[in-house]
Length: 86
Ligand code: SF4
Image (cartoon, rainbow, N blue to C red; front, side):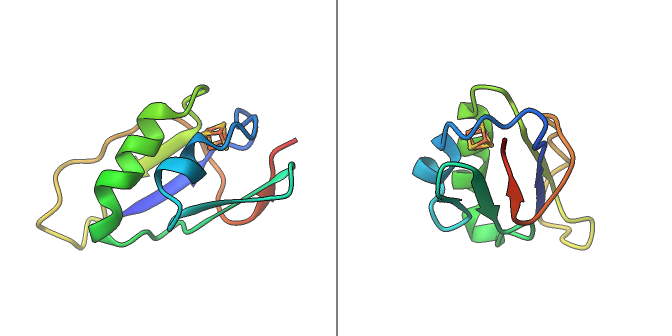
């Protein structure tokens, strides 16, 4: 699965880091570090984090190469990797 965080929306509430700590990590107050290619085993956590994000900044897409995953689930957003949230 692939995911991106819309850093224009992200306000650093850290709900994602709480719900999926293996994928999202807060670095200080201003930077969100995340794995844009989360493992399929982390899918539940990532979807929970995306649902819980107060500003719906997390976009989750299933990897088209993985036939076992369902159709994509777009929440919102753009951007990836380590980036400032403010
Ligand atoms: S992506 Fe959403 S839940 Fe995660 S830090 Fe940003 S605002 Fe908070």
